[in-house]
Length: 380
Ligand code: IPM
Ligand code: MG
Image 1: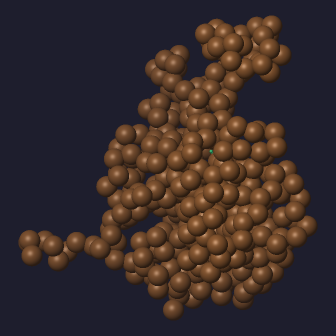
Image 2 (image 1 turned 45 degrees about the horizontal axis):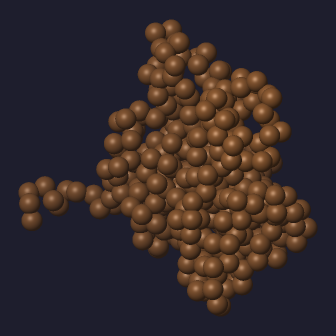
């Protein structure tokens, strides 16, 4: 064995707290991860609003390199602002250089081809925020394409308008609109992108003995892209005869989910509908303080809470860290550390069930760190 080998930890875990409450919840989650005794070296990296303002990039190259080297990465949250508001906060030297702010988390997903966004939404017994006890939904959200493709024009190039007029009949309705008075965002969905997320949803359903996959779309109106997604799903479903598949339009889906939540099991959706439906599902099991998320590719994965950076609560140690603690649990699942993952989940569930330690969203006065300590102490 080469000298030094004995000192190597089993895993290298990237830790990117980001900004806002991302810092609070990651600090809390590290208490739990350290207590569970994962054999890991934790490597912290620079990412977040501060780096946008100072360097013009919220996801600096060194953070990208770090994620590539790690076995998995835990990410907190990052502030996102619209293009003009973001430009206004750049240091003077960087203003007017044409730097355009794009959400770092979306960039990360695309750059590393983290095509699965996995969002389990489980109602832990005794959580006063549960919409219904017993809910256990899982969202598979396509994570790299669709309306998130980034192919957008806020002044439409004339060449593009000319081609569209030639190729698309409905485009005639816009032919007299001045080019700087409309915008185009492209919804791009590929067969490969659709196939792999749908397969991931079916494989998961099979592996965990679940019963049904519901495909969320708007294929009655958005016929090309959502039609492709739905048809692909119908094709793939044939190789999983023991699993029931149904589908629903995104608008109807939001109603049905509230009306008959127990009719649903695993949901799969293109990127934007998955974004929408996963917030709804998170709210049904306690809100964003409980929504955890895995961005998963073939070899690289980044785990995060579904919530954002909530700058108004930054540094107050007020928000609920459970979403991030459950994201760390997902990370352990992904690494194959099943026992440790289960230990974190059981400890979290028992603290929720006891109801003694509750953060403000749950009606209590416990801090972010109190909650993490309680979960760490309940680990078996
Ligand atoms: C999410 C968030 C992100 C998204 C934002 C922060 C860009 O809402 O992870 O669901 O839209 O994907
Ligand atoms: Mg979202």
